[in-house]
Image (cartoon, rainbow, N blue to C red):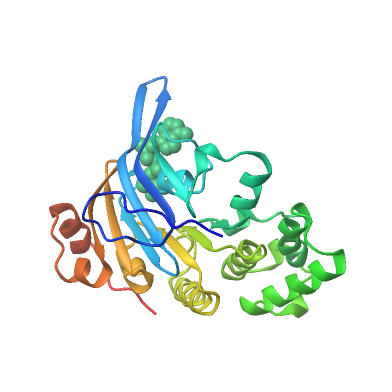
Length: 270
Ligand SMILES: Nc1ncnc2c1ncn2[C@@H]1O[C@H](COP(=O)(O)OP(=O)(O)OP(=O)(O)O)[C@@H](O)[C@H]1O
């Protein structure tokens, strides 16, 4: 049975969060001194919800994503995934938790294995996690490629033989291979042409509806986030300066930083 996560602040509505960052801080020690990349951030994603994180370059968005995924330890605070403090989970249990959260990155080509075919890229996480037989993994990979809109006839082509948009679809199919509950998308469309961006955003929205995925969606582009997010957190200099339901935040942004970001937005083409 899974535990539900308690509310973190008095008065805050109890939310059945798949993942929750509680007062998380991340400090990187560099030769030039300490960089406080994330500063006392609390953020959660409820089951089936899409949370957008927006902010200018360097505001700490990717670091928050890595902390939520347990890819880096927090300097202070904690991340709780489905009721488990990630810092207290190790070994096999951590592997199992990791399977339940997957990431889609900005540059699909960089995240695919160039010497593996599209199908082999999608099969690889299943192989690493000892899922099924080679035949069943292949069948599943072909199904997933079909689901994300890559013609299964092209399953044996290599990443370089696909366009950027198709590569991102393959990367999304691979992220879905282990049936994650949480998908963290870090600028998944910013390396793509505008028309292709819209297609990938529709795909992510559609997959969420069909698979009931929870999603953390990171972008510096507010228009992109507006399209997908139920709730939005705005980051500046490592802190969340404003957070709320997407509609409300876009209609009446309260913080001057959000107002400035919105003022800089160009309408998205779809
Ligand atoms: N491994 C690291 N070592 C040192 N500093 C880091 C490291 N990772 C991130 N930073 C710093 O932390 C701050 C936040 O970076 P982060 O990549 O999280 O921001 P971001 O909002 O995702 O930016 P972008 O949109 O450009 O990716 C930046 O000042 C960055 O230089």
